[in-house]
Image: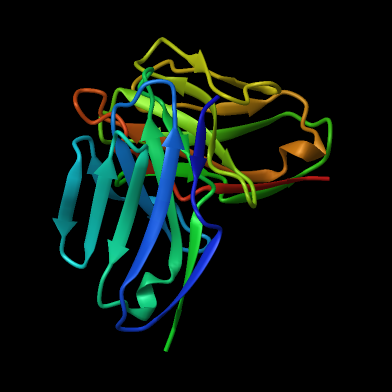
Length: 109
Length: 114
């Protein structure tokens, strides 16, 4: 079966660094996506990895290891506005997104 | 219209009633999707359309139907609503020419079936 696992909730302090992990098992693989979703709002695209390694984009970075079926999203210099859910999704062999349940990130002052 | 728009934003519906959720995009994306999002679960694909005139079933299609008469519109119909269809519904689109996976979402429709 297809499965995406990520922690349900994480707490971090403003100004700190947090790493949100995601493991995936999908039928085929065409890339790993991270989306951000603020409460009551729509998901918005953050990052896309299809090759192994780290992709850096400002305060956010995303890492992929295809051999391990593993990705993480790294958020640096946390701000209160980063409080949101972070959704991991794998693009399967049919080019359909398989979604994790999301990680709710709580930022404390 | 800028991006992708859903209507209504919220609705309370009596069980057994028919309801159509509307979705319109102005980005000329080929692919469109309907998801439902329930607490503790990931987004689940209901139906999708890779291009105008074609549709396909997703993970949870039962009780729902869609049509894609043109590129811009992708309505979702609940023929006879049941309480288990209470959820937040998101419509999304993506550019299938190299952009599959980078989906743009509407603001969502919060549907309560009573």
